[in-house]
Length: 117
Length: 112
Image 1 (cartoon, chains in turn orange, green):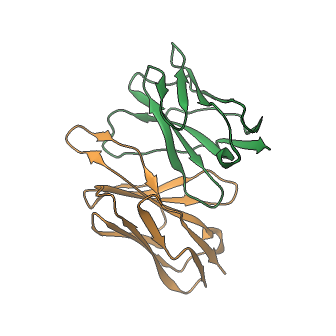
Image 2: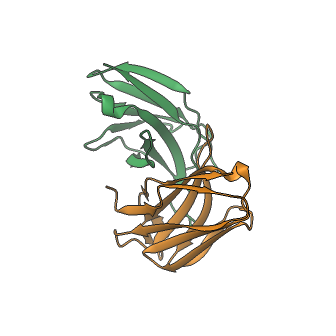
């Protein structure tokens, strides 16, 4: 148990569906992240939120829409996805000393395995 | 971003030490060296990190070359549970948009 919980663990959706992935961290961290891991490819950083503000959007298509309503919760809203978007979506959190720009280690959830049909 | 080079895979026998190498010849003076590992069906987990000096913790040791162009993660006694993909990552000391960029890593197989 890492203190980062992702739901659902598995999701199957059609290309016209709208769904959301949820991430919750119980570690009191102030930064949260979305990563994508496709089969046989390295993890790709998608979004970074620090103090609930998005500080990184790594050229992700607009069909992926993140939301960070507070420091403990992170969502990834999905709509009109493509089959190539099938992947493991991982959430992570960390503690950031904003004044110093110092970052501590990342804690990852177990991920949501997404299949787009 | 500074890049790292790791072997695609390595094998070890259970209860023997494992030395996982990482080359980072373009490392800058402010880059930390991080190691994470990813067990099957799980997200990555932190293993260890360092800047210049060798580091030890309950999971592993990190040996950093004097010129910092390479490092080695040392598992002192491999267990079957250590079978995972190990990632060596560089990250600046100060980075307002914190980005840990994962490469392909080294897949470690542990033989019973």
